[in-house]
Length: 113
Length: 111
Image 1 (cartoon, chains in turn blue, yellow):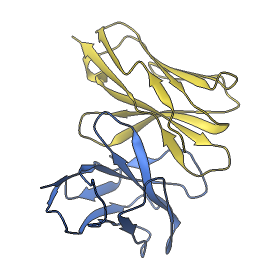
Image 2 (image 1 turned 60 degrees about the horizontal axis):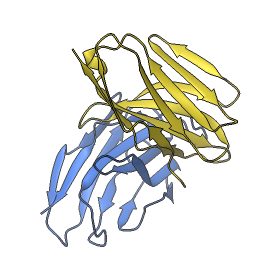
Image 3 (image 1 turned 30 degrees about the vertical axis):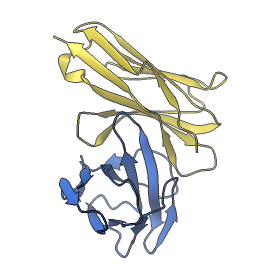
Image 4 (image 1 turned 135 degrees about the vertical axis):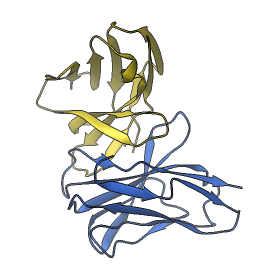
């Protein structure tokens, strides 16, 4: 899992609550990414950031928000507007302006109760 | 963006056999990458092949790329039980900084 940490490993949320997933990297990467993975499925891009204080929507951004105040950190908030948030969330980092290797964290499994 | 497709969805082989997984994609690409995911874990990068390359090797891994057919294959030779995992291809579309992941092939290597 390289130099990327995600916390918590497991997260339970009640309907109507916002929750924030943490992602930290010490690889000195400018680019960071959030993906969602559903059972038996590939990864879908939620948000990405190529540089501090800038981020872009991915394919499934609705119901999610992010911030990028520090190079090392890219937290993801799952809001109550996300209708089906139960999934496995993966954070990754890489070189900005490049589509070469991405380095992934261990993931956070979010379950809505 | 459209996801690529891996084939087969699941593959079960005996230890020592070779495993071949295929990936198709839809657009012109900068590169194509293969990742491995153990159950409940993050993805680990295995190998990257650029659009101007046709074949690449890394240890027991061999990747081919056919841009005319928009397809790639991953061959794992002399498989081991520890190779049991899901394998994903990810294509980097020309002009984009995003990776598009396929749905993966679940490989089971039986000791």
